[in-house]
Image (cartoon, rainbow, N blue to C red; front, side, top):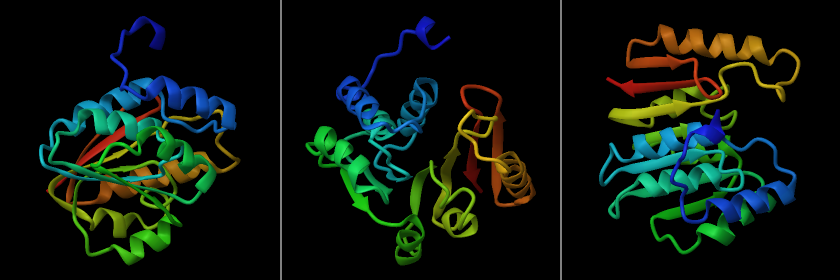
Amino acid sequence: MTEEINQALPKAYNEIMEATAASGFTMASDVLTCSLLRTLAALKPGGKFLELGTGTGLSASWILDGMDAQSSLVSVDNDPAFLQIAEQFLRGDQRLQLVTSDGGEWVTTNSGQKFDYIFADTWHGKYLMLDEVLNMLSPGALYIIDDMLPQPNWPEGHAEKATLLIKQLDDRKDLTLTKQVWATGIIIAVKK
């Protein structure tokens, strides 16, 4: 289906994709998810953005493509080898701050910050420290997660974790959310 949809790709996307394939990184967000990330980023002019789980920077390239010139993106990952790919191709964008850190340590250290948009694409902010990350959302802010439909790279027992996470999000009174059975399974929530 992806091949049938003609998406305008971010400037560095093809180069990052080639370097990603060469690196052996297999957990990059798909094009449909990334296109949605870009569109949602355009909703937050002058916004403060956070990505937990940079990987090689593929999704960051899309988020940056949707952001305006007054916005900023902090993208955090614990793997310097993969983060170096993002640095190589995205370093010229002054709106971007790439951080090499354990996600839990970064969230703990920066828990007082507020963001207008959080894409949680790693365990921290999704399966770990969910409350702490959701507390970092400003009113009206977007919280986005993907890979909520079964994926071939899920380890044994992961489906139960995803089901529990969905229930935790459903039970919250401070979020309005939509669960999409599309792409890899996306949940978009807005902080009330």
